[in-house]
Image: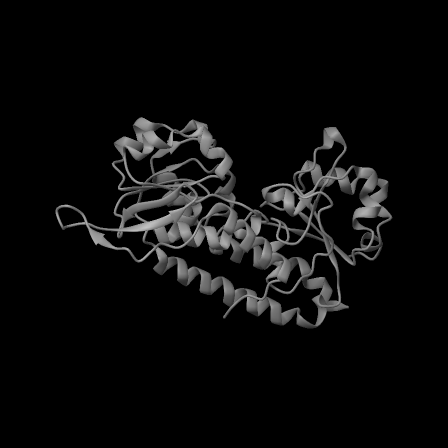
Length: 333
């Protein structure tokens, strides 16, 4: 089945992919000079790259780490990815823990000697295109072919994770997990079909800056909203002054603007940590007297959502479960 998404979200993803040039591989397979190893040309952020048709030793960094662990790719080294640990299954976390770490949390923390020691035949870099400048790509290319497939708008994780799995020759497991996600989304969507269509949602994200007196309002296609949209939720409004990447789908108003920003919301959702605790930036909003006067708050229609930073289909299933539990009171109207 295919997930129903708002037209604006589809357009945002399409635009993001067009801008980054990330896409599926070509069909130009061929043999190397010895005639033993087939290759293909893959289109990535860093151009059209000749890669092994069937990689056997893959190094992954950034957002490619959880995607390729989940897809059961033949990984021999990864970057640290602590932010995603709470969303990993026990099996994936065990794999993550056991793999050699060839880079830190930041792209600039790449250990080129460790990458070389892993003897990869493919390197998949999952960082945003602007961050590639922090990596010596030429040095990595002297070790193995490099494909850069990094994030753009938050909702683009679906296409980007598929491209990463495709490059690593791991689409079989990827496709199975995608189907499980889509089946789950359809199940939850059917349960709320008669409720969500009547409501307009707003979302408070976890990245406001308390010291500056701002909060994060997330719109369609952002981290806190895109998976909920797969079950039919509508997040109204749009960014006043769009910027690159996530700033095209989220903004940071001052706390004084809270009534103007979320005053028309029938329901307000907000991001919480994996353990359910409320982040400081969200608590700051909820502690404001302006919060208590919002119509959605007065009506008791505010719901926490865990796992809002999901960037793989497996993680997205956890988010769907969390949304299903959070939205349950809406069925008791």
